[in-house]
Image (cartoon, rainbow, N blue to C red; front, side, top):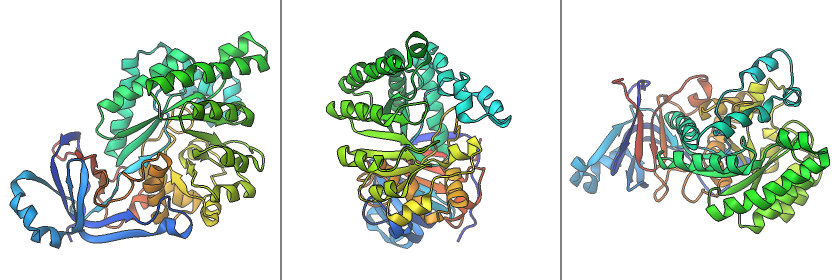
Length: 447
């Protein structure tokens, strides 16, 4: 087997008809029913000395290099095929990053310094930092500028093995700025070869201008009306978002307010997801009631979740999306209870939570490492959670998340000899090439 060597240089995108990945030391993919849960989460299929043929943006065949070399169809079309030597490395399904916030104008460096000095997330928000501090930059920026910001993040993600990304709005918090944010996501998606799923997060926090002008209860009702009666209908009519999200948290939106938003979204045909239990308890039993009444695609964060809520989650296909990058960056001692969730049979996904305040992270490889070191997930469990279950969280498991014929040609090759190394070697990019719906994105050694 060839020695695996890292590929370095500038990213280059190529549109390819026929691609044959060969000399794959380990081809690693989840298998079985979707979503993966319990002991089945860690079941992977591994093919040694493998090859994968892609055509027309789809995976056509998967097998050994020996079989590929003997295939008469391949032999007859050798000149038409772009063959990629994976140098004995590891190939996974492309990562599915099912929770990101990429539409922002600038990093929140003041918040970063305050946190280092000892301020908490909530203290920073109460002092005018946090989510509200990103509003001015988004509101003043043009759609084109925001689209370039989003595209830059997507490109960085592609270079690190991510092929599908969920992108939320949420830093505009008025109708024009939220629509502009979603339009920026759409514009960036049209220039990127991977798959983008957009989400309206108008219910991120109550914007400060509402609080300044009205009493607290009136401000909340007025802004909720704006989300429900203006943002959601506009997004539904324009097709700018596939999902509606809400941040359920002390200082953001209450359980009752979330339910009002869910009802409005589902009445307009938009499925829902939610940030839940990131910083504080949400109250035992509410998740069970919520899941009985609404078809919730995913509940994200879940740092604070009760045994009753875990039992309720286990009875549904709602994905629990865990975001350990936020816990790391916020300096929290507490991480989502992954082992408890997995042990109960809850389907778990992993994502970066890429955003300017609590997780400026684009690298899913680092998320895999955090899943192991901080949440005690095995490398196999983390891979399934970052691929197939992430696809399930976005309603895309029929197309993405595994390497098998008929699925989208979304693949990532890593310069390691064993798949467990992807979580082991943290803080760098081990990805040498990525295939996004049949388009090659490689790190060229030629510079």
